Length: 327
Ligand code: UDP
Ligand code: MG
Image (cartoon, rainbow, N blue to C red; front, side):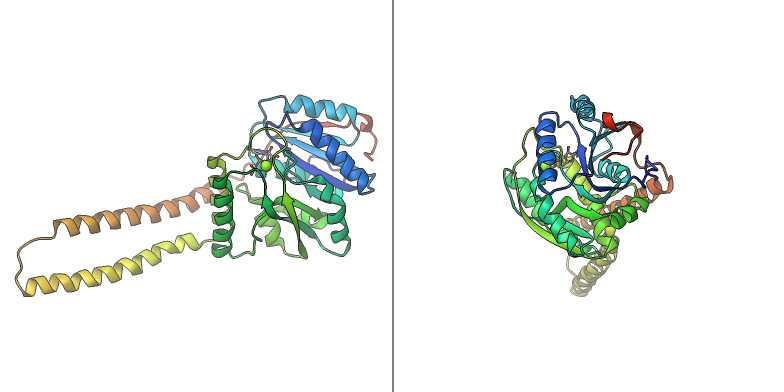
C-alpha cells in the first residue's frame, strides 16, 4: 500500500482524517467546527482529509464544494463502500501532517479537544487516544454490546487494546508511517495502533450525541468489526476445539461408567434420549469448531490474494493549492 501522494516533503503540522459515509447532513457543521478547533489550537499549517466511503447521498458533492472553498480540504473518494476501517486507512495513507488526528464525521468526538490532545503529545506521547467516559444518545443495546466487546477483546487478545477506545486519537508521524506499512485487509485500526507500542496515553472525554443522521454501524457491521478484531489479534478461539475435546472426554468417561454399571446389573435396553442428546451436542460442538477454523482459513485465503485493501476513485485537493504546497 503506498500513499497516493509522494510529496511528503511538503510537511504540514497537522492532518485531520475523517471517514464519511452518507454524512451529508453533518458535513458543513463538521468543517466549521474542525476549522474553529484548529484555529483555537493555534495551528495554521494543516489539512482536512475527508474520505468518501462510497456514499450514496450528497456527501461527495459537498466534499468537492468544500475543496473549492478551502485550500485546507482534500477529498478522497473510494470506488465503493469499503467500510470505516479501510476508509480510515485510505485517509491515513493520504495524510501528510507531522501529526494526524482521526475524527468521526458525526461530531461524536469533539474536535475542540484537539488543543488539549496536542498539549499531551507535546510532553512526548506518540499516541493520545480518546477514552470514553460516557456515551450520550446511544441505544442501550449499543452501549451493552460495546461494553462487552471491549472486555471480551481484552480477555482473548494478546495485545493490550485499551477498553472504551474508538478511533478518535492523535498520532505522531512515525506511528502513522508504521501503520501505513501494515498490509492486512481485515483491519482493526485501533488494535494495530496498540500493537505498535511506543508511548500511548489515554485522554478521557465525554462522547457526544451524533450531530445529524443515523449510525452507519448497523449490527451486521459491528459484528464484522468484532470478528475482525478478535481473529486479527488472537488465535485463542482455535483452542476452543481442544477445550471441547477435554470436556467431552470427561463426559464420555462418566457415560462409560454408567454403561458398565447398566451392563453389570443387566438393565433393559434404554438410552435413546441420552444417545441423541450426545450426538446432537457433539455434532454442534464439531460444527462450531469447524466454523472457527473456517473463519481463520477464510481470512488466510483473502489475505493471500494480496489485493489492494481499498481503491481510490478520485482525489480532489483544495482549489488554491494546485501546484503549490498546502498551508
Ligand atoms: N463510516 C464509514 N464507512 C462505513 C461506516 C461508517 O466511513 O461503512 C464512517 C461514518 O461516516 C463515521 C464513522 O465511520 O464518520 C463512524 O460511524 P458511525 O458514527 O456511524 O458509528 P458509531 O459512532 O455509531 O459507532
Ligand atoms: Mg458515530
